[in-house]
Length: 486
Image (cartoon, rainbow, N blue to C red; front, side, top):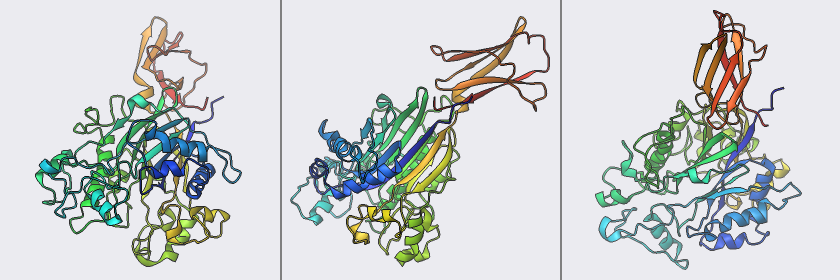
């Protein structure tokens, strides 16, 4: 009897758990009474993802416990506490990303750092400054933020995170991306020498669903293509932030991570199992993206862009908002963000799995219709207005069934006669069940009588012996690999 397929629910949610000062989010999460955090947690308890990326979650870049304080408090006081009678969530594995947001260049006197080109470099921040002053500081940082770590992201997982194998690309320079679309003539040569491509961070987080079965969670939050002028510096940066993942899954040799290791997602064992996800701030058909930025991934040969997560709320609210929505091309049911009429609702939050290693069982966007009792979860109070939302984004989820990655679980298959027997050998992979089938015509296949298989976990080699078949001619063999939940 075959084991049940191994299925993982992956989600991304820009939850807007950001605050105007570095100390405020940990303080807000120190109790169980914050309404926004309660509703974010309830949405998560209803969707119940196995792995979730939360964008716009402040992360203090100083060493632990401060770096993980807000993340752990949200887990202990909200996720692990029943909301509206729902079962609590437990994520034993967590990751808080260091971000470029709110990090000053520290090189204003030698390299520039006037990233907004207003003639002055602001390199220090103050919690008591005016909003305009904080914006001037944020605009000259490596990524916009009023303080270091604002708008960062965290990951919660029910499965082990291979911490030692995490790769971060926070320090990768924009100028080092061949063919970049940096606005011509906008940044000085000194500024180009220090400008980091990632507005927050790009992180490859390997997650081990079962021994030997890993998928790479590729998490990021590119800058919105807005808040600039005709040079379109943010739109161009958004395009190239998305392109970084395109190059990464293509195993581009020029990429270097924060540890100085070059190369993308290694293809040493052939195709890899990955999920690209996050608030990408890019709609495939509408909005202000530069050159259809997200389609660099959606059209990639290794990416399965077929699933179109949808919701009844998006379909309902698109026509009701009016404004820019009246000229949209994309279906409003696929929208993931509820913006102002001037911007319109857009599909900017994405879960994009690899074709290799997954089949898609289901997907959706948590956006109830206004007639649904759960509609109120999207708002801080009974005032159901755009400005009263807990966040202007919606959670996007996808159910992924793990399937074998052939190049990883059946490697260098070879058959030879050994006396009266035929012996097959191949490189194996943990967590995979094998069986050998025979055929005389390449049409009809059978695994009966069963061919014994011995798998050596220490050497990752499998040997199957078909006794007494050494004198048989015209016999063909194939190896069938399966994954299961047990």
